Length: 136
Length: 337
Image (tube, rainbow over the protein chains, first blue to last red):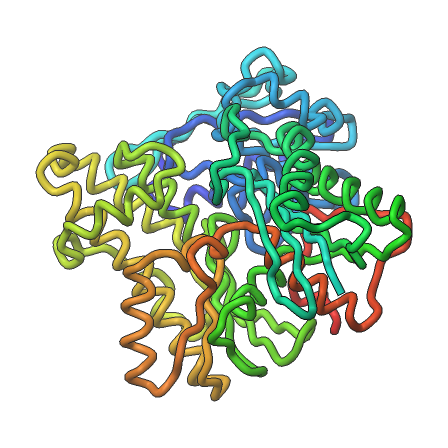
């Protein structure tokens, strides 16, 4: 799907949000600036969060509480060794009551649950290309 | 009163001793140890595990260097948030246990309050009320400071923090990661007008920032013409830096005008940026205002600012019960005096 601008990224995310449920894991692939965090913002908006969405580059994970579930937004770029996830107590984040949105999942290969949904964003001229794969 | 300060919110382990009589007694931090203390090992990537290993020996060294005994400590201050929960817990547990063992009070400190008060460790200090720009890898905030604990957030970044934009753009330019300081160094040799980059959110009346689009603008420039990373790398760095800093200064000037304040405290990692300091000093002078900064080593995370904030809070009898918790997310405006 071609996304000409930020607004269309947010809109696409809002549509996809309806297909994501508690207990699921979403991987977000894409280069720096491809729009992963903007996409997450679109998902969170669809679920009813309207505040600022910051990339958890430094904190690695940001929680967002909703009445039905908790969303954990991960950015694993800074992981040097996937084993470090163990020190974060990462397994506690994956539960039937949570939705985990994971940027840079490739940094933690073998240490994360399988994705229920994979989002791939890439540059396409001034706009972006979105690929969306649902595996469950 | 002698206060031990503990900072473990991200990936720097900072410890310090602040005395009501002598001021800052001494301080140490792990990533850029001031002295020749050799700890070795890798720079911590995920902090909690490393904090556990580093904190205790660091505190021991601090007392040895300061020629103090732990029996002289009257209170312990620790960063309780915001930050990485696991990392915060290490400092909180250490500080609480230390205080319990010595039967002295412990006080939980907001990390950003520490940054906000860091210029008070210097000879040149602002008077209340003042405006503060807190600008680091994790935060970009404009705060109205009426008194200790009376903080009103006027504006903040809606996406990437300014320091984060520096680090991410440095990554795009192949300067390593985190490469913010390397980008700033490279910018010294460049022309800040060489590339036209957006000044995000300047058209909006509010005091909020958005730096994510600037990073994307740089990505587009590189994509269109990868040559510029060879032919005009310094110009690109300078143009990017100017775009961030122009925006920061414009919003601060606007907030100073709106509040009628004349003093601006600038703190956090990005406040070490020399271009920011030069530009701010000259532009604030033009509007009859003045900027206050911490010394360079206290721009980044450190124990000294936590010890000082702790001293102020312990002085008025604030301390925490034995139980403790940390807060990964914690608004500065939730604090009280």
